[in-house]
Length: 488
Image (tube, rainbow, N blue to C red; front, top):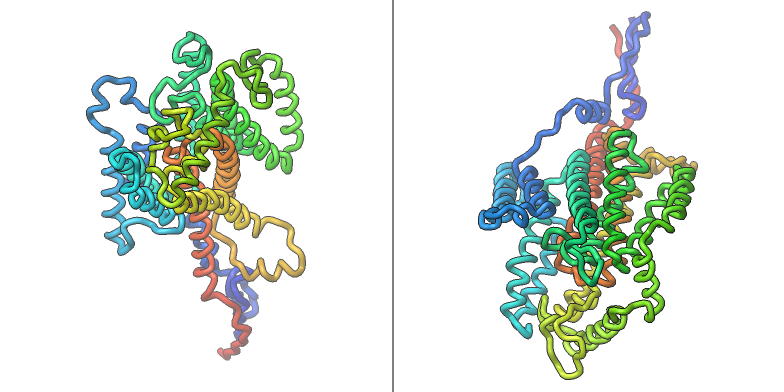
C-alpha cells in the first residue's frame, strides 16, 4: 500500500492526510482554530488590580462620600487606588513584566505631569500648583496606568463602559429630581450636579453627560441584545433631560457634534433608525423649555444673554491669549489662572473657560504640545482600531486580497468584535463631544478625558495583541510545497 502525505498549509485547515484505499480525510485544527476554541470556552479570571480599579471608578463617579457622613474620612478612593496599584505591581512583577504597561499614551500622561512639576517653580503660587499635581494629577497618572494595564479583554472594556454609563445616568437622574424640586439650581434655573467634583458646575455636568452619552447611544442602536438596548435607551433619555436642564450652551453644541458622529455610523447600517431619530427630535423640539432656547439663542445673539456671560467669555479668551504671550514657556502655574492678577485684567478670579487656553496659559507651550499629543492619540487609537476591525470584513479587491491572505485572522468571536467596534465608535463620538464642550471649559486636569483616552487605548491594544498572537500562531504553519512519498 502506498501512502501519500501532502503538506498544503494551514489556510485550509492544516495537513491533509490520505490513508490507503479508504481515502480517509482528517483535517487537523490549526493554531488559530485552537485559539478560537480557547477564547470561546475559557471563563475570564478577574485579577485584584482590575477589581480595585472598578471600585475606584465607582467611588469617583458615584461619590458616596458626598452623601453619607463619615465616609470622607475613610478616603475610600485613595484606598482603592493603593490596593489596585499594589495588586498590579505584584501580578506583573511576578510574571517578569514591567510594573505597568508602557505605551505612548502612558508616557504622554506622565510627560504632562512632568511639565506641571517643571513649571511649578515659575508659578505665581508654587504651593497652589504643587497642590494641583499632588492632589489631582498624580492620581490621574497612576489610575490611567492602572486602567491601561488591567483593561485587557473585550469583556472588561464593556464592563468599564457600562460602569461609567450607569454612574452618569445616576447623576443625571438625581439632577432631574432636583430640577423638578427646584433645588441645586444656579443663575435662576440652571441645573448643577447634586454631587461635587467634576459634576458640580452646570457646564461640567453637561460635558460629562454628553461624553458618556456617546457609548450609550451606540449600545441603543447597535447592540444585539434587546434588554441592554432598552436599559441604555432609558439612561440616554435621562442624560438628555439633564443636559437640557443645565441649559449649557457648550453642552448643546457638544451634544449636536457627538450626535452627528453617532448618526453617521448608524446611517451606514440602519438608515431607517436615523430617520426615526431625526423625526422624533424634530417633534420633541416644541416640548423643550422656552428658557432653554432663549439661552441657546445667545450663542449667536448677545442681546439674548442677560447674565453677560457670553461677553465675559470673550474677555477671558483675550486675557488667556495675553497671559500665554507674556509667559509662553513656563506659564503662570497649573491651576493658577483664576488667581492671576495683573494690570489690564478685567475679569478676576475666573478660569479661562477653554481647555487649550487653560493649558497654554498655565503650563506653557510644552504643556500645550503634550496635551495636544494626548488628544490626537485619543482620536488616532480609535481610527486605528476601526481599521483593524475592517481588515477582514470588507469585500476585497484582487490586489488587497493577497495582502489580507498574508495577514492571519485574529482569534476573536463575533461578540468580542462587536464590543470592540462599539467601543471604538463610542469613544470616537465621546472624544468629539468632549472636544467641543472643552472649548468652553477648563477641564484639562479633570478625569473625564483620561477615562475616554484609557478606553480608547485599551480597545486598540487588545486588537494589536490579538493580531500579534494570530501572526505568531500562523508563522510555523506556512506552506512548504514539499511532497513526501513513503512505501509501506
